[in-house]
Length: 434
Image (cartoon, rainbow, N blue to C red; front, top):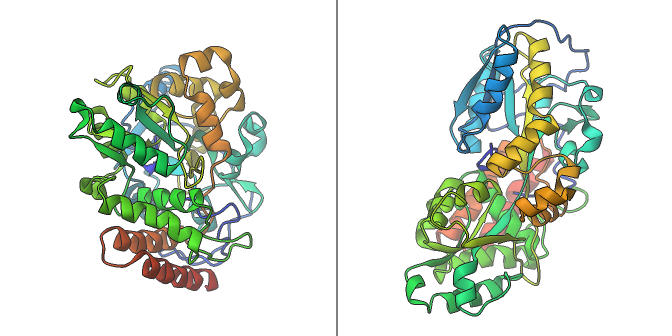
């Protein structure tokens, strides 16, 4: 589910709250004609079988919720279609289905950053906002499903990046608190690595393969160093000393092996598995890792904290998964009812308890019994409420591809961080001028 789980399942990438609000259509992932979002009322008619389309369920929980629906609605069964775990592949397959106007996909689990693109191309339907309990949800999360004043996607889960860390090793090394800065984190690693059991461990990893997760990690680094990708007016502003400090943290960490060289291939699951296998002291990942790590050899040996930054706590990218309705689907009455069921507070509570997925409902973060059972909830709420959203752009595929290309070139030594940011500034200026 991390956007799944990909960070961008995610990926779960924050560019800025203002975003590059482009009016022109035409994504690198599709051949849209530049249409405006439709304004005609949608007729939610037709009942019968539908499909639910999402990234591979690495949590093992989605089918349980679908089974509950199917048991209560034997004539309106939902078939779960699982796509690859990475958000880029999910987006591409959903676009291909839409461009052929196929009814194979009904309800789509979309990354929070896709709403503008999908709505502008009329690939998804506007939804009746008054039929969903949006007032009970965290408003930054609700806003990810809106486009031009209309609701096109309903939050199923939210996401904020967290720092997972080995409490047992830090304590043994004399460290009593999680680091709040990058310098503190590297210093803590040096202490831990003096322990015999940690000499072969690496310090830190996130997601650095050339996919959406790289956009997320880069944006978090830039924002956590006081920089930004775009300014308050939505204009590119990445060629700055602050942004360079963020990118330099990643580049230098690869050079000095704070980040292991193999992390250049990491997506979410690679990092999770490395952490659970005691190969990492610190890990930047989404909260879904918590429940899985509790079932692994590191159970009872780790905790979570807000992401560190240059001079203090950093800023996560805002992630999560929304539900949208394909414009070409059949049985839209069934689909609408299923979306209400899947995004209900009851379902969100189930996903929280069984998959550590961040709920969109505000009151679940302030529940004393839940906080006791899931001690990371206060940090998660802080991560989400202070997260920097990714841009609501029609051309998001082009924007994230430009970021990935330049950042990857810097991480692999093909470009200096100075040159990569200069080139990225030019790329984004061209995109915003279209």
